[in-house]
Length: 210
Image (cartoon, rainbow, N blue to C red; front, side, top):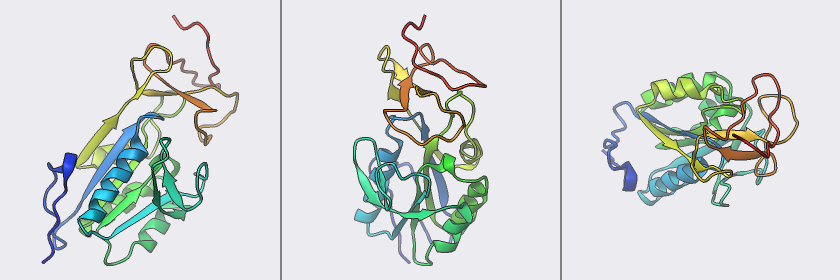
């Protein structure tokens, strides 16, 4: 029976036996906090351990590449592209050990069921995504994934206004809608004090935040 041991910062994880349930890991935080970077790091370490890895991202995320997940620091890993969470379940191969999913907040709520099914099949499932939207509200389905995950990593950026740990994604363009894919031209990392939440309207850059 093959056994694989998680390495590095993942040493707290158990030995994976294909005959027993796997687990779910969630990496959550604001934009520019290193979520995709941490996901890629874990996927690379799994491949070093000769585990078979499959990676998926939503089709809406085409900012940097069509067939790779790419961090803001330009780390990248090859990836499949899907429209729905159900497609992930259909495309995971029998021999796969680890499933990585980036931008989890852009998937439908079925992602929770898909992650649970894969974990019950004995797979290690790693999901990265925003836990809050631009208004500071929970960004589904990430809160549900946080509830069912065995392991949770909360990442923080640095507030561009004051340098404190940043937990919020400040939208700085006048665009409506919860899902607006963008990077540094559309969002800033902000701390609790500097974040300007607007429940019913997009947030714009504020020069003087008290």
